[in-house]
Image 1 (cartoon, helix red, strand yellow):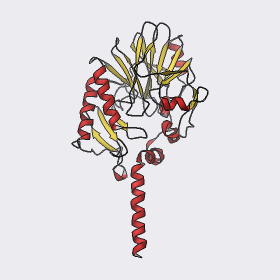
Image 2 (tube, helix red, strand yellow):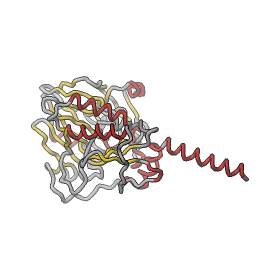
Image 3 (cartoon, helix red, strand yellow):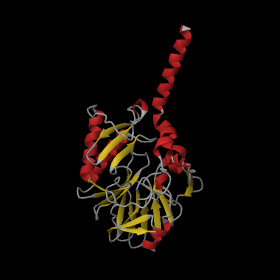
Image 4 (spheres, helix red, strand yellow):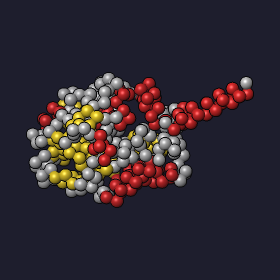
Length: 325
């Protein structure tokens, strides 16, 4: 009997240890699917809108004469994509969620050939990949090695679409953009930046002349998801310091998710000061001086994920130290 109890206790410890080690994978497999996702199109919101409606679903906002923000405020995550125009070609940064077709929106704004590049490969950013003139990805040896005859199929935990019952897409990659390279749009040059942290292959774009950076899910108003598969706190800190060393202090950071209601519907914009706050929080977290905060959205068993205060605008949601390095 004692042996049986000891074996059962050992088995229980092994199960808990395995669950803790693989928490970033178990969380989307169970928690996001059971508790966290909504798939229906939301009712048209009542709060003020920055920009104009397109087909009663998208919102188009003029950032400047050559840049548009394209929002999906009726999608539960409030995604924003960005259209950057040059004289000869255009970039669509993020490909929409796929809930509604973003192609007609873009075509209504420019006749230029459009290259679409996703900020990262999660399901809510890749809806129209392969549906414009060209598709680009951040140059990454592992991604490039997986491409067969130029076509790439996204992996389960790279895409995470199973939380909405979405099949992993396959699309043609026409261009691989190296981090640090510059893309010439004709009269406008955009710098490509590898910005790992949220995912290993996250990418941002920086227009130094316009003082505009497009940062995807690396940072945005609200709870930063830094705990899903591939997320890394050390990469977050390294990328944050990289951006602080590169960006002009006047730079506006255009992010991929708008602030939660009742905030007005408009392109979500942060500042370089928000990166400074994130750096300070990450350093404090590494030193063990940042306290875990209670959070109504994440009352999860076994303390996963963990929520930390960054600023009035940001919270960092991370995993355990051993699976979120």
